[in-house]
Length: 300
Image (cartoon, rainbow, N blue to C red; front, side, top):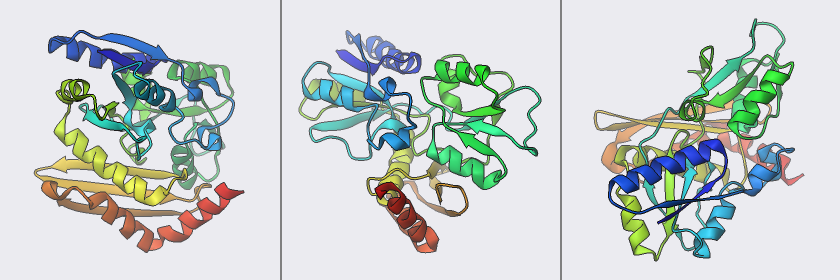
């Protein structure tokens, strides 16, 4: 089985996990690394590139052209609607969903600070909490971003904890941001295959982790209803406890000046449609004008 992956260290680590687990099940596998458009254009922040699926498109094409049998992605990079002909076959057991701040020496959050991130969601949540700070853009794979932080005069940068942990780069002084709501599906890996490739679908489905799939399904359904095809600062986290799904979602103004949140729970067997009802509740609580403002900004 040919496993398609981006060629960044983190993406290769993720694909290697899938490769090892499929081999343990008796399948023969080989990794096929490709360079995505998102990895080539590092000058602009992601939200300015305005292309959903910028990291997944190259692999989607390779799948549709039959050059690979399955693709491994960070699920948070995957558009909520897959290209025609492709299906999600498995969500692997989720890693940490948290965001962490990697600080420079002598960081004082009470004073003026410059914090770096390439994420609209992290930027908006940071400014909502620390309106006196400045947030600057930061792109590139994890190694590049850590190096840029090292070489800069910034006071810190925000990263996904799972990404740093997976390739053994989590600094000892990293601070877990417990107040920050993660991106929908953050910390989860997904396998995508061709809908008519029965062998690839059945083989990769053996790696599915049911609870991770349910939680990420809810978070991504929430995202799909809210965003309507445009990038917005949206956080979502679903957790399963004793047969219940607990959900916390939020939408922020791009500049972090306004935030609307929703918290709801439902029984685990009624997870389909739950993300949608949470999104509708959020829109009803004041999310609609924020979303309209974001769409206006995008259209200029």
